[in-house]
Image 1 (cartoon, protein in one colour):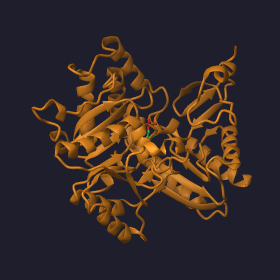
Image 2 (image 1 turned 180 degrees about the horizontal axis):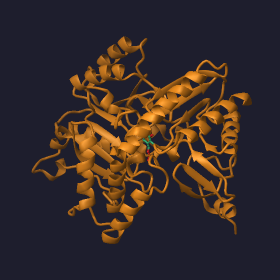
Image 3 (image 1 turned 90 degrees about the vertical axis):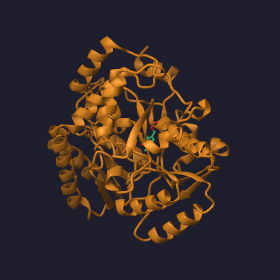
Length: 421
Ligand SMILES: *Cc1c(COP(=O)(O)O)cnc(C)c1O
């Protein structure tokens, strides 16, 4: 049986209506910025495989470190035991996280890092004998697909079957120059009853919504109100974390720092899954007690897996390197140049950029999974570029190791695609 046949017989892909879209492109290998299919076609990974492989696919530096680690300690229970891969990672990560972050809690993916953050927030208030059951979240946010994360995601257009089970969420629009004063009033009145446990947000860029961006200055004003009302602020940096917004973390663009931060995606450079929920000392302290039940009784089997910790540490070492930092600057400048070239094109409705994240809206009406979206996708693939348009939004979030020429290839493919409609 060939690969396609076995796939059709046995595999159920994420976010897929198999009746309408039964075909999946078999991928054989990946190296650097390229993914390669079984016919020898290479595609530039313009979205770093959902923002994971930021240091390039199959990065030799990361792989070698992980290989050495695997020979020494594969996995051990993280309740009752600790190990160097976790402590070494902790030192390196705390060193680059916003300065109020102090404790790290491990899990396996972005959604669980969000669920953990929410449970921390609810129990923080519970332990302090306060009844706070509501969460405030942005409209069109995406925080993951587990029950808690799905509940706070505004974007979940296909979550109909589960909506009855959701926790209590109040939605607010992202701040703009126009709505900022109204929004501040709205938040002040939402917080009046002292029943809001937390505010969860994707700082500066809402990824899955289509790389929708808002100003740091505005978000900072909202964070101040939440802080003043003892509402725990949870920055979901699963997408924005590790250098993508021009700083190591998007939260560094604001003076009001989050109490809790969710990390995953490029944490391990795309080699293995892992997530971390970090928090400030004052969150952690609310769980310290001689009473057992005040502790945080949440745990995952693969918590702090030593090979994943090693991949994460190697990734942070790369992020800190001059080579990567210089390339981040090159990508930011390069996007700016591309932007000034295309922003007034008749087929372009609007453009936006935050760090190495660049997005443009095409001047055409389109459903999120409309026909033109697939036409664009196929066109880019033919051009040797892997991009995943979100409705009429085309965005670039390429690995940090991409070269100027390779970026140019992505830009050309996008410009040529303007002729498709
Ligand atoms: C991808 C993503 C998640 C979910 O992460 P998974 O690892 O897919 O569960 C959560 N929040 C944000 C902002 C994301 O981009």
